[in-house]
Image (cartoon, rainbow, N blue to C red; front, side, top):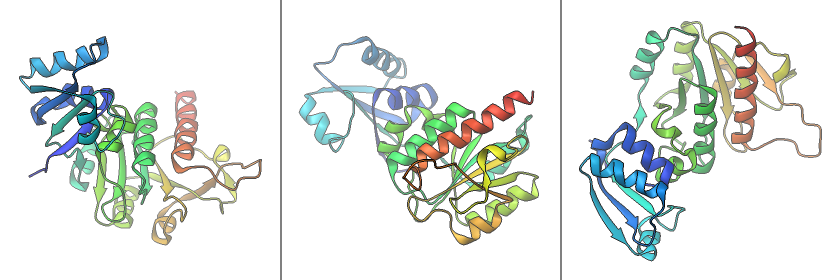
Length: 249
């Protein structure tokens, strides 16, 4: 059974009400806010018969742990996390080449949320991450993802290297990102069944993850910094793949 989770932010709460309103038990709103965006959320909540409580903003601040809640907080039982079996079912049902994002141990919720948002924008079918030593779907992740966490599946697996092996057996090419690669992202064919693999903040990909990749690529770094934030790199890589895939049609 899923435990209760607080979801905050207009995009995240609205996406939850659109996708899984039955998971929401109560919504708290800023009693001083009456704008159209909040009214849209309230309308969805009323249609679903969800309890609505109006609070002072200070109380909402405390309820959300002083996060950027934008005047709305929801209590939900949804976990939103998929397992490997559900991922494999998804891959079998696709009528187009799989397009996946693999995150090897991203721990910062802001980075995970930003990666989910970029993944959703790029049309990724699923984001895959390990269960251990990695961030899961927290309220902060959902807020940063701006609704993407309710639309793009996050799959958490027990053994990432084993899952990568199963993906390769299904004909999915794995392209890993590392500053030590000799090949540029822009020299790499990113069309067809594809999984783009990103390493964790700081340490990058683990050894077994690196060994599972078919190709290793890097971004050209033309200034003084040696690397970019993982969520920024993710966005660049995903949209280079989108460019190539659209041009191949």
